[in-house]
Image 1 (cartoon, one colour):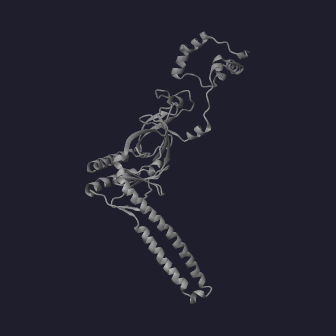
Image 2 (spheres, one colour; image 1 turned 90 degrees about the vertical axis):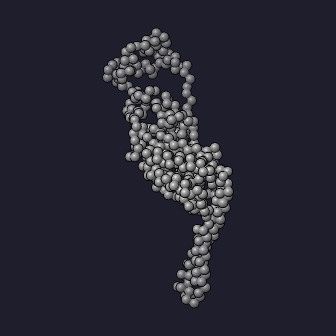
Image 3 (cartoon, one colour; image 1 turned 60 degrees about the vertical axis):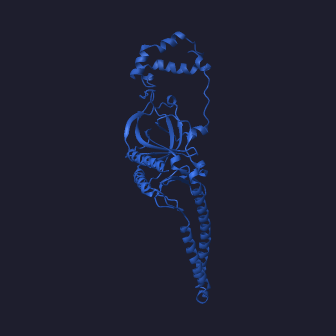
Length: 380
């Protein structure tokens, strides 16, 4: 039995790589599975196993060891799902948190009004909380006064409680009356177009699955053994949520799209409002937003939604041409499904992307929304 360095042989190297038997076995998939040598030729299999452990080749001595990735980079990619995109992208974190302080030039005055109204409502809500606390205290004192007989003779606490109750009601009315009222011009054209968007959006939000795409990075297809060009991290959002901005009242309804890693999106007929329940707002002219709505073929490793369509299949591990990589045991097929991809960007920092399982509803919304934007450009 040999120990130490193996004797290099150029002749054997060339012979091994040009053997027609090897080509036939690999191309036709006739190569025996790993470990089967113990059954086909036990003596040779045991010899090779010992030989590989007691000797070392020249290649291994000259080979530069690969640097290990740190744990933080591995953890960051644990939740990434492969998805086929039209073009490769770099690492993208999709969040519009920085855009909260940005406002389109056409809507600076509106932003000031919204901020002013918001501050007034905050002050009123603070007063309302204090008034309610005092009212509850007076109510407790009023109830406790009767067992002590005081309540039958002294009506002062009852009067104070009644006055405090009126004050609470008055502040509540002031809160409800403190809002920005929006009345859109050219309502005859705008209303019809926007209501079409509302109807199409309502159908879109009935999709079985809606995702907020929060992270994306390009994939080394050769290393990952996949046909996917981009890996994405996605978060499910609830399409049934119907939120409104309570301090903005419009003569035309708004569209609401939840955001898992940033401010929520509220679409009004002429602008987009970013708002997350704090004092910061982002207001964007719809004409300044680049909305890309496209078909995305997604390698779906989870349960396929019932309202989508499987357009083809791929393998968990693939060759460069997309065929099955037979080297991996248990290599299984994965469906590629048809989803709708909505990406909203702007030069001011808006960067949001969503994916919808119902592509037909997505297509209808894309048509109505693009028509509405074209109308805004015409009427200015």
